[in-house]
Image (cartoon, rainbow, N blue to C red; front, side):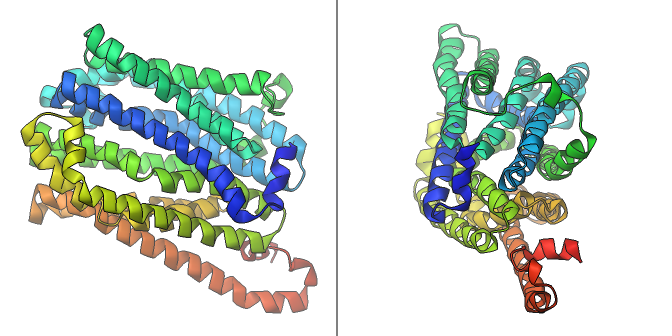
Length: 468
């Protein structure tokens, strides 16, 4: 567990780079394999295949996000426990994460298997897209528990201080998928089913890699029966913080229902295919912010647990600055090469023509994404589920879903695309204003608190509120 000691002592810029670069590389690799997967489907299955993937992925990620939620929530508990040198609690937390992930993932997979057709219809799988969407979803369900385990484990591994191992856990499925896609789709001529099996096997590979880390690797968090016994206080804490991630993914899934059905209504199968490409580009465009956010969380959690408030405030500023700067570079690339990006995914001239201007519209506010994501992650890392949940839901819940419903009434299909940059701007403004309000409000109390009770001088402002 000594690998976490550097979180409280190492220079923050160097520390963030050590944590964020592997996370970013892992996310970038995953986004590249998702892009390549869509390219194969687009060229060898057709626009309907892209539409099918667009319908199915929000469903599978909703189920597998249970693992992500348990991983993120548990990692916050782990990081603060390690910062406080409470190792027994850290071990117990991991054991409870294992049980929660496997039980809930399998339960929801069984539920998904019984209601496959209904679920596909709700998420917009209609017309020519319905049959390939059902085929894709049915196969992908087999891999969802493995994906849930991998997503949980990656967050735990990062919280332990092994960002490179977490990076490899994301690279492994990407390599597997990149190898199997052309074999299954082209050589075996399996079409959309080939893409589904390639993805499912890649999920299994990632799960096996992370399991190896806990059994044979450097991890001190070994799986044991004693630590897996349910501890309801720990489960409650994990669930409280994990609910932020789960709620975010839940809202994203609600957005997918609204968005897919709106796209089908205003743009037909073509509208869904355009968004299938946009969604893949979104994964690529967001990778630096997501990587920095994931690298930022364990650093904040540890330093908050160790009551090193100055380091917490500094890492927030550094992270937002870095993520915003990189996002500006990606913004320029997207605006300049929108047409070339569209051509990567399909040879269908109509689809290329429709997708190019949409890329330029959807990504207009890309540099602002860093503000909302990092500030939301800050509150989650320090164990404040309420503010984290509110900010996590701001973009999709408060802005994007209503805008997707309202703007098309006046602007048609273009109104859906316009909703994205408006939501990004709104979420960034709300997050920044909320963070400044909290800091300002409790900073004013700091001087008075120190005079009345000098023991609180090393506490974060939000922690002082709990002690009042």
